[in-house]
Length: 325
Image (cartoon, rainbow, N blue to C red; front, side, top):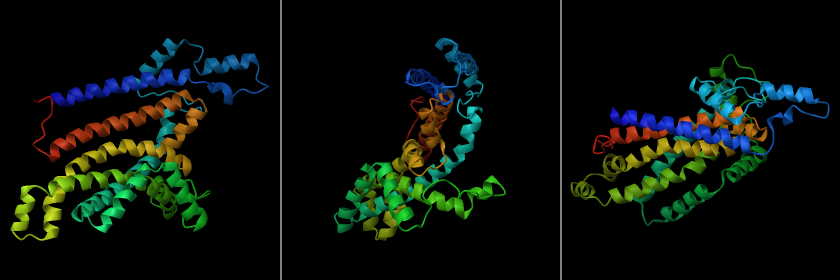
């Protein structure tokens, strides 16, 4: 319990630090949030009214205090561009980002884990000579390049999948669940999810292979072979189980990489998620929206880090929390 309370306190400190950095960073950036509302016909009085409306007439200290106190109450402010609460704007697109992230992660880690175990078991064979360079190449390739290749081949070339968006323009659905589980939504999801999964699968593949190579040298593996156990039993019941622990922990932490990749992938495929929303908010100097999106992403990453620590402890009883030691 002491460990959990300590970690929760650390989480709050990190959130406060990130929020503070974001607040001052966006206000030091060039440009003004009023640019989208001001043209040659806007009078000086109208400009001053806009400044007061957005609270930009207050000092930085006053703006910062309002930002912190409102954030503690769950109020992330009003979007300059949408003129709506930031929380409402973000929550509209957050489900799309969560679905894209989780589908990509599951596909990447299931494939990467199985492929890594297979390559370790067949170490030194031709399949390893092909698989390892291929995994390193996809891991090193930029997400936007992978996305453009996917678009060029499967969208514009073969025409198998839509080129962007989450739904066909004009499509109507009875509910949000009906939209998410519709064939139209899944077809739009396919290319961005595959692109992100291809980028992410390199880490679990290489990690699982490395862990498997270590486990296969252990004495209990040799003992299993001496007992006459089949290769599949040794691989699945003994070697893979012991090699999975770091991969399971990396899965939770991998959400950070997935969210970072989402920003690029969502932009390439015009996927209406929090990553694309963040890019648009920064471009429009929409301080509250950009801050809110970053804070929500940070909160998710911190929670996933916390879950990873707890998961590591539950999967391996030998691990003890630092607080108890």
